[in-house]
Amino acid sequence: MNTMLDMVIIPEGSFLMGADPEVEVNAEYEEQPQREVWLSTYAIQRTPVTVGQWQKFLRDTAYDWSYDNKTLALNREILGAAALDYDWSLANKAAKFSPGDMYPIVFVSWFDACRFTEWLKETLGGAYALPTEAQWEKACRGQNGQLYPWGNQEVDWNEEMALFSYPNTKDSYPKINQPVGCRPERQSPYGCLDMWQNVSEWCSDWYDITGRYYHDPNTKWVNPHGVTFEELKRHLQTLGISPSGVDSFLEYKVYRGGNLLSSGWPRCTYRGYQCLRSCGHHIGFRVVLNYQ
Image 1 (cartoon, rainbow, N blue to C red):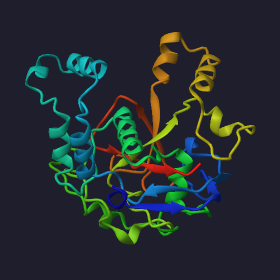
Image 2 (cartoon, rainbow, N blue to C red):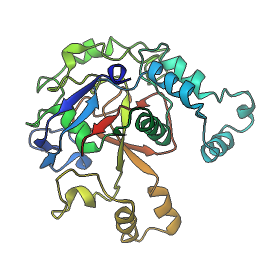
Image 3 (cartoon, helix red, strand yellow):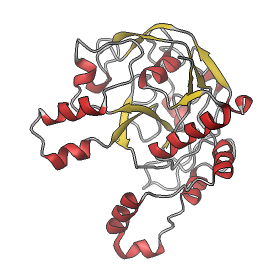
């Protein structure tokens, strides 16, 4: 299993996290500010979790990989009568966009990804987890704040887009993902791949829609794990949001890394968020192994 995961070591030390708007003119507010962050040594997967790795997890655990009841009810309500003929199999959906063992697994919720890390803990005994935003970004850009995993050189967008095929002119998404590790020339300073294309990836952090955690001068930037659930709740309550509104904003987790639906790819600082129960063809994950 250790060989199958292909982990790379990220040594302890500081790095520049976040965007400097004077350098990254297209950076969004939520990517700012740039700050120095210190992280302990950890290991991270070189590529996202693959279909083959996910299938081994399913075989070993008999995990129920399906829509949760709340999401299922909501989707059925949206679809109405069409729900009767809808294919609700997540395995079938994933196979459409990732048609092989070496493709990134998709249609996994944040909960699904966390259960995979629990299986690794049970099987291997290590402190496996989803990466924090800080861990993901350091693995992506290295220590010195480069703009893209491979450096500061802009890509040829026509060349990059040509790698992906589209089913018809009405669709705004690629027909299929790409096998993991297919662009070794786009590796990060630590040798991580697929941090710039293919699928975005779940992180462990809650998304603070108020922005206070990231812009608070009192935030401690040593092994940060993001805003806590209780801190986030307090931030939201100070905005005068209704209780139901607060509850809805307490359901978002961060994802990192661009995909072809992202406006910000392939910047290392690009951030997105999604309901932790959601799943789709554009989000997968990779795992870290924490040593402390």
